[in-house]
Every structure is written in structure tokens, then in C-alpha cells.
Image (tube, rainbow over all chains, first blue to last red; front, top):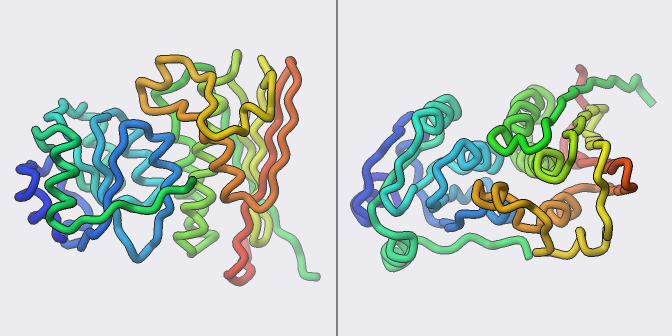
Length: 120
Length: 150
């Protein structure tokens, strides 16, 4: 699923567009704990969307370490400029939806996005 | 046996430096991109360094040091601090067990799976903890690529 389609489905705006805008995303992971996010099993051929309500720098750092190309912030959270700047430097797309996490996940799942494998 | 080349990186991690958790791991991963072309390897290593860095920031009294040693196809990481030590290592290695302060959890850390995550990806893992300090040593090997000249 293309980024533009994801934006349509969860009514999201693109906060940071430098990165892999044409990427095709089939899997997602949702969490506010970056500790748990670091525990997912990433596969290079399977680019991931990270869905979270946390907007600090650690989210971008986690995405960068895991080669996650796009982050969707939920609950219409205010995203600090330093988070956007770090995402731009590391070419990680940032999206924002006003939906709560449950609804965002439900809409994307209904549209065919699958959950990623988790480590435990 | 050919010549063994060694390169190393050193970082200091401050106590309660929650805001910068992951920044050293990012630097390490970027530096190593010139050494190791495998994204999968860099990701595994990056996760381990991130977790070690987070432990130093969250759980130490005075912060600690991160040493990254690159030799041939292996990277060794040493994370060392001066206390307060891990009272029960078995508990610390139990998934979900955490002593992280509320502040760290609010920022998305302290899920209680950090050491497990390092064990999951590391090819060797050694942990010793006393009240006067903890030393964690692990290696992540890049098995499927050729040797590099540094």
C-alpha cells in the first residue's frame, strides 16, 4: 500500500516527506513503548509502518535503527520540530492522523495491512 | 591467518539521559555502514547497541561507557558503569521484568526486554554485576559477508 493510500485511509497529513514516498507497505506495528518496537522482527523485503502516539526523538531513532521508512503519529499529537528535523535528516516519512491508535490500526487492518512478527 | 585490523569507537552515556537514548546507536550504525554492507547485520547490531545505551542511561547512578570494537567480521560491544549494579540478574533477564523509573517509561523505554533483545541477536553475551558496577560484553558477528580492509 502506497503512502498516499495510507494517508487517505486514516485521514492523515504528511508532516515530513523526505524519504521513500513511493514505498509499498504491507505490514505495521503499533506501540507507545519503543522498547517493544525494538523487539519486532524486521525483514528487509518487508518495509514497515510504525504507528505510535509518542512523538519524541526516540521514535525517529528507533525507526532509523530498524530501517522503518514511515511513522504514523496518532491522536493528533503535536510533533516537536526537532523530531521532524531528525526524521528529515534520516529520510523517515512522518504522518499524522487525528484518529486514536485503535481506530487507525483497525482501518489499516481492514484495508489489508498485516501485523509484523514480534520477537517473543 | 591474515592481518587483523581493529577499529574502535568510544562513547560516554550520562545518567538519566533519556532524551538522548538511541543517539549513540545511530552514530554507531552510520559509522559501520562503511564496514558492513548487510542492512540486516547493521540492524541487529544497532538494536543491541541501542539497548545497551538505554540501560546505561536509565539504570545507572553515574552513567557509563560504551566501547565498540570492530575487528574483521565481528563487532564487540562493552557497556560498563559504576553502579548501582543489578541485584538479581536472573530477574533482569526475565522478559517484562523492569525497574525503570516512570520517567523512562513515559518516554517509551523500560519495557523489560532490553537484555533479552541483546541475547536474541548477539553471538556471544557476558554479564557481570556487582554493587560497584556492571559490565556487559557481547559480540555480533557478520557471518555471511567477506572480510574487509579497514
